[in-house]
Image (cartoon, rainbow, N blue to C red; front, side, top):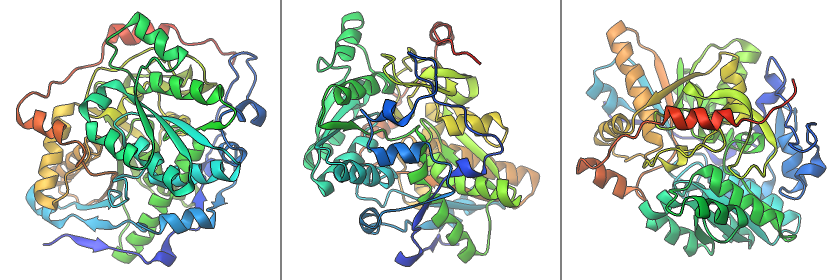
Length: 453
């Protein structure tokens, strides 16, 4: 009953990213310029992103080639393993077949380098000197710091204050690769200073950190901005995960009935699930897709599908997404990578189409699940990944109750070895669930921008 590992060869690592836009039954809503009310064009995005990234953002091509310099670096840890969790199956006494794609084998310990390497490459190729970005729990900042060191780029990271304080080793990791890490909100930018003036003890949010990083890039000619989730090109780069998983399931002579991922902005979830959803659209290969988010920041389960800004200072274009309102600051939690007021537009659209089932779990029940997983499988998940584990265990228990042997795949998108303070608090009974505030969300949603139909 030991865990089984399904491994591929280097030649099996995809040479193309998969773009789900090509298979959607309806086109994505346009991105809107807040000043003109019209769809944005490449020139509107050029101050922030390299042109190749912009072209990927608006592309409808099904497959986009992965540049060889990017793929060469990805081969350092890819293909990542797929495991059959037989010990956990036995512990749960479930007839379900449980598989997990493990992205914690990357040098940064998560899935984030899959897009960080690509974005750094395109910036370097365009002659950019520096990249600014935001990070929540620190996985994205760590990945971009790593990518910057490969391509000789300066990296400026604005890290959400609550995670900056909770996870000091993340800052040290980024600095080890030459990046500069600043707690957000900060006095470095106008948007940060405005937040501090209104709320000096602000715990920060990804929306605030995005505002600072965007402002930093927009005011410097030698700097571009990079985002670790949400946008189409980021989700595109992550599909290398799901494409590998498909090949590994061929080796296992199986196919998932259920695919599960945690969702904050949507990148790891999309990377695993989009190739399977695309196969369902094209070939009718049925799969149940579940997106798990924190109850303290329930963007998909309780947010509104509407046009909104991606940041708190309203510096970004307007995108149609599930949102809690750009001014909403989620309660503190140890799952800092999931504390974002919005959801990826493509994830939001596919949820609206009925092909993704969103669920929300409390912080403590997710850590309960993560510990149960670790004691069977020997890997301690990141707090964010614990949400996917909780969703998987619920489905495995449902299989037991119903007496059905379904195949369940989830993305273990990173390890928790930089997050031990979270586990320390959990075992000490000092982890408290903070539900999101209905009143705060109502106020934030009341301020949604008006966009013509």
